[in-house]
Length: 477
Ligand code: SAH
Ligand code: SF4
Ligand code: F3S
Image (cartoon, rainbow, N blue to C red; front, side):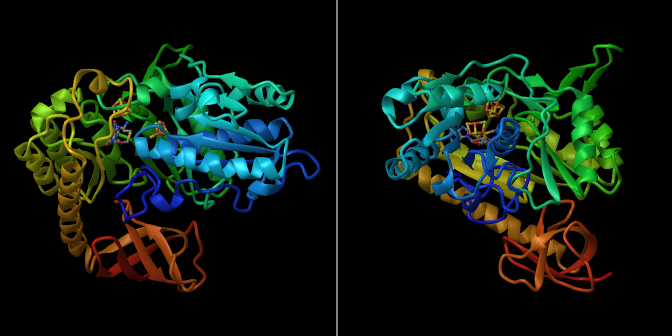
């Protein structure tokens, strides 16, 4: 899935293609050497990856040790995504592969977690006989019990969606982390009803997590050497939590400020912002704190107002443009990225051109682009015909991608000669002699190692070479 996005890895958005299905536990100590072991693979958005860390924590508590080696596990878990049809196909293909292991090692249990589990519920057990457990995103506390049931030969199912569950006090087991950057879920579910989207059905109602538990988690990350947190939610701007004692209502701007104050040394990122909900107060808060990164992922979905209406995004193109103007006015060096869907129901060529134009107008540094994939049960599936031929969808998608590449290149060119504060994340993919890290605008910069700097350090890097996808530079102090 995320079919067509070859380039910049981005902490604030769906993980890159290469990371989909990535196995966790890079250097994870084995919690319980003699006990049972579990293996977990994740697909989809960062919320899912973050959930896998909660699942790992719950299983570790009940005596399961994590393993990266599927063949030696007693329990294979796959945390699934339903956002597009391709994402589901990929999971089914993985299940075929798990089947082989089950045959070689009878007794191995297979559990399907996440959005696809929620969408298909017990139907999964009929369709995929090898699955022993089906567990929805709000039922992870029940996992130890469901595993026990499955061990006893019963199928374990819990797809109950909660109005309250936020896993607030569970300390996630940081699995795939580079030790520098960590995710914190600040809310769950979604109350928007974008007509194309399956998330409200798979994740349930929106609910915000207790502010103090978020601050505690950020503090714990800081104490463990982390230097960056990314606050996650489907629509972070509608974060709203009422302190039961003082009755004070905390909004997203207040939350951002509170997290920024944990330490000036810790960068704060967040995703996803919704154009209808992002306020000037939020933008001013970003501007006010050096450690809140100047980067906003603000998915437009379409550049045309009629299509936006059909999508039920509840803003039009002018509204979107006004929000972008406010961002650039208040934070002149802010980077904005987007999600765009090509070939939504009834989209005309002219309307599609408006999406292409929006990329240019808004100067997105990056766009995650998808062609429309009808999802069963959504408003669009019920109301509109999926009438744009696949070939046309793909061509339109390519036109958006091409425009984005041009715009990214132009933007990167402006970075030539500039010096940025970069947080070192680790070795670059290509060479052990080079580090990679991001600037505040979330652009990845690759540069040669110098002195004794190490991952987690901030360094000043001057950009001296660019492509449409990456910046290269050198440490200047
Ligand atoms: N909450 C986020 C989006 C989460 S889903 C937001 O509102 O922006 C990530 C992206 O997947 C969406 O922004 C959208 O661009 C894309 N997407 C969602 N449903 C889709 C579908 N049915 N077909 C194609 N792309 C889809
Ligand atoms: Fe889906 Fe819209 Fe909610 Fe995003 S805001 S998760 S696109 S329903
Ligand atoms: Fe995320 Fe996919 Fe679910 S994008 S919320 S894992 S449908």
